[in-house]
Image (cartoon, rainbow, N blue to C red; front, side):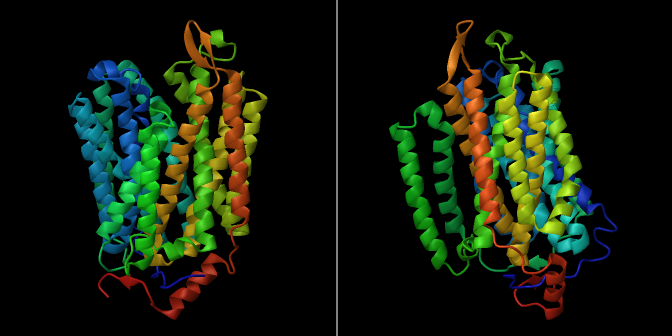
Length: 492
């Protein structure tokens, strides 16, 4: 194990006396709900905000961009200044963004508010790092698996909830609800979560953060807007070339900085780097499920395959997947304990591919659509639960939050690429229905096949990750008995 410092012994008065795990899981679910609730609003927001559809799309893009940039940055800040402190700050920013959305109908204010809400993307990696520091090994696996599953659980809950609010109440009500939930999350974290004692002191790499922000924003902006602006347009090509140049310079500087934002030498180790590759591919495969299912079941019946469901009914179709993620997260922890997390990751990716095989076999009957989507969600649970465990076993304790932040960033890049790829496939396979272009069933099946192939690639990547040389609990016990070498405890 590449462990530079030990994990301090879990404090007996921490998780046992306070509901740390459920509070952190609630915050992760809330983060996913916040990211999802705007989706049912998108068709009506141009009318409600007196703006264009292109401007409204930035309410999604702004959250994606800010989340991608802030996740590794806040992860590093958590390792340096305290994970609970940074976690609380990210929840405060999310809550402030919700209040701004609740108070305004101006599209500029809404876009800025959604960018603030993107800070909540760091909740999951920070929480996983806290769980590593606080829980004993026998409880850690199931808690981390649950934390990872909150992303899918919150998304599955958020869509039907938001759809019902939009249908039966003023749309601002939805943001008042998320504001109240955000305030509850801040209060609960302050009460139930202790500040982690594991720190990596030093000077924050501001230039590294700025370089990463410019490079990632250029990359993801080009990916997310390529379909609208044109993949060969000067703007998109300029963004990609600029991103490549900035990230290359950033990489060069990070290798030469004494206290880098991201430890690239750690990232390039096979156990860490291949885990990040698998995260990118799994994020791609997972995201296509929600994107394509929502469009397919809402397609008009005149297409011959569409079910013409409402947005509320669509959300309910995805709900079984969220319930499955909740139920299967403990199983993921058990498999990881018995066989190792790379086996769990490979199994999860294979199950995702099987789910897409079901989607290709039959996407006309509602029960088969729900079954296929649920199987994909099951595989996602196994894979997403295994990824942070792989990172925990491969990095020093004082770099857990930043390493998991990079892993979540890779999932985000995969999801952005998935959105762009699915949109490109569907745009090129359309037919006229009632005078309007609608994706064909063949286009949807191609999207499923593409996502399934990427899932198989994720499975292959998982199988190439070097295995553990010793059980996690044994290794960490040995680390603790050797004494501190790299980690710094608060107050020491």
